[in-house]
Length: 375
Image 1 (tube, one colour):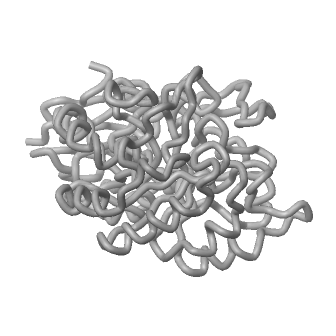
Image 2 (image 1 turned 135 degrees about the vertical axis):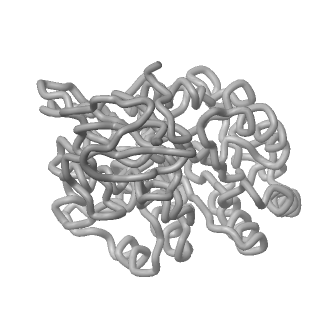
């Protein structure tokens, strides 16, 4: 007997090319069947709703209580439908063990981290105090970063580095060079944050390798990926050809409607939609992953593609093909989504506003093959 059946929803699973109204069942913590007339101990009518694989947010900050920017993953999972949170370098070699023991291991939802190359991680990030962790080179010890990455190799996805006027100040490109060395030494990919110059977009992107992630990839000018004439910049096209992964990482200051419209018009979709949710952006304009996905839906990207960019694509980026799918036998995680119709006011990170006619809202979460929220 199945433990749970979701009946009558529109099942959208890009990993299998499925987009149809059907039932889905879960048993023993896994997806057990897809089809008509399924029965289970717990049956939920989700008619009129979307059933997608459990959403994966590739850029979050969920070291709550251990860093000033962290938010609570469990709370955000309940309100925002995310079942896998990728923490984008909140913790560094000096405090990663605390992140693992006190937050990751007890969490009811999956948290997979990048390790920050800076020893204390992102240690001073708030509305009143903002000190880039790469602004002082004394905080970067590459040997310690490699040691901790190897010690926690069962968990660490890659190395995170933040460069730009805010994050690295007068250190410029040096933190990036060290992070790239650490990533190569540890055999891991790199995730790079780039804010306002210096350094330039070209300096950073030109050094990135296949499988590395450029987050904040549709940021507004300066360091935008598109030229004023509407052409995608050469170094961006070259990076995509090499296999660099382009991740939205909306956040508080890293997503522009103008940039996004230009990139979409040029036929350049991001590889991944993510929120970069943290203690500031959770209050807007990012809010959460579903809100960021809603913006792309309102900008003309179709729903199956939007779901693909928040499920199967981030799963591929972190080399976890067992996630972001509803294939029979896969991990029993799903997000049930309402598509609300109306007039919704959206903002980007520089204050441009857009009225959209659709908004994605979480209507339920399945974890370990059982209905988890709302209870």
